[in-house]
Length: 277
Image (cartoon, rainbow, N blue to C red; front, side):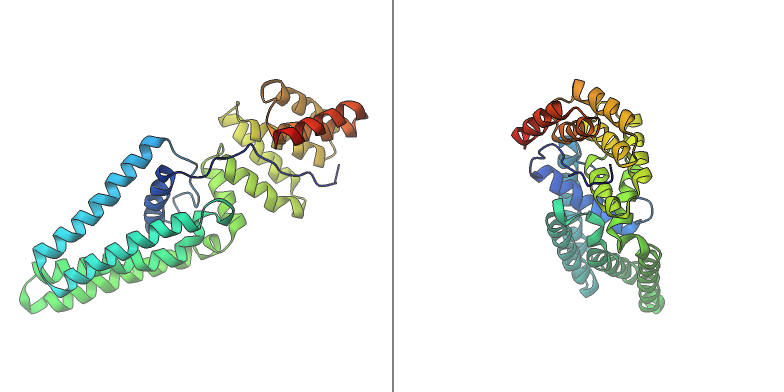
C-alpha cells in the first residue's frame, strides 16, 4: 500500500479568456489582502469573466480620466503605472496557470507595481486637493504610508507566497471542492507520506461536494496508502458506481482490487483506465 499511485485527474480543458480575466482581477485583489484571499481561485462561472472584463476596463478608463482631469505629472505617472500593472496582472494570469501555478506565485512581482500605482494616485490626488502650502508634504506622506502598508502586507505573507505547498493548502482550505488545488496539494504531500493530510483534504471536499469524482478517487487513494485496504476498496467501488469514466477513480479501484487479490478485475480496470487517458 506504500507504493506510489499516479495522481490522475479528469482531462481539464485549457483555461479560456473568461478564466484568465477573472484570475487577473483576483490577483489584483490578492495583492491588497494576501492573507485573506485564496492564492489560487477555483475556475469560476463564465459570468465572472464578464464582470472581471468590465472591472478591468473601468480601471483603464478611470486612470485615463484621472490623468486628464488633474493634468499633473503625478497623475500622468499614476495612469501609466495603472496600465503597466494591469498588463502585468494579465500576463501573470497567463504565466502562473496550470502546471506553473498557483497564482499566488505572481504576488511578489505584481504587488509592488500595484502598491506603487496606488501610492502615485493618492499622491496625485493629495497634490491637487490640498492647500498649496502642505500639498507636497501631504503627497509624500500619503505615498509613503501606502508603500509602507504594502511592504508590511507582503512581509507578513512571505511565508505563504514563497511556498507552493502552503498556497495549495490555503486554496484547498478556503475552497474545499477546489479540485486543482486538492490534487496539487496531494501531489506535494505524497512524497512526505502525509496520507492523513491527503485523506482529510479529500473528506472536506466530499463534505462540500459529494459528486466530486476527483475527491472520491483521492480518498480511496489515501486510504490505500494508509493500509486500509477494505475501506479503500469500498470507497473506490462506490466512486466507480457514479464516476465510472474518471481516470483517478479507475486507477484507485484497480490498485484496490490488486491489493485485495482480485487480479483479473484489477487488470481490466488498468486497461480501462489507460483507455480513458
